Image (tube, rainbow, N blue to C red; front, side, top):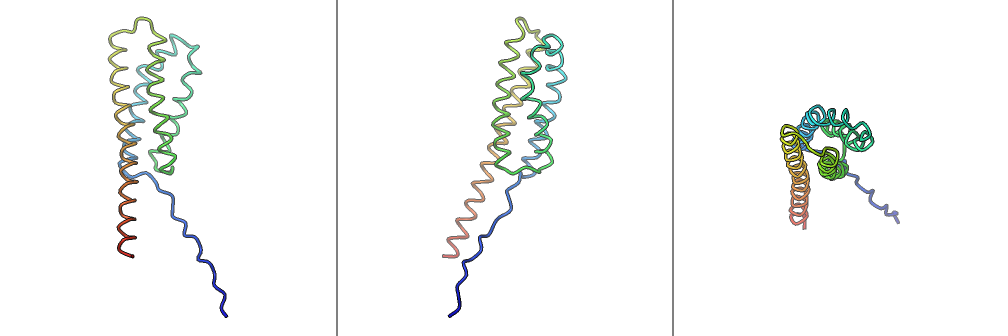
Length: 147
């Protein structure tokens, strides 16, 4: 009597970011670069003691380069985008804490930076959710056709 072998588990390739996800990460990276130049460097020159508080943002900045290249899994990307959301809010609070009387120009940069950052972050998270829902729908259709 032939011995039945269990079917090997099929491992799917990890889901990567879509091209739109990479573009959103690139836009966020460009925005972060401008924010560092226009707001971060002057803030650290005025208050050098705040340098450790900027480290999480620098780490996210470096990870965002990997997102732009599309080398991270989608699950890791979601985690990075959630931390980016928290970092945007942290940066806003830190800026308001560090300056008693920010100039109109600084407030203008800050408003644009946070607005663009939050918009890009929420769009990136929505895009990842959409991709996941779309793939789930495709899988359900295939299963229904096979049944």
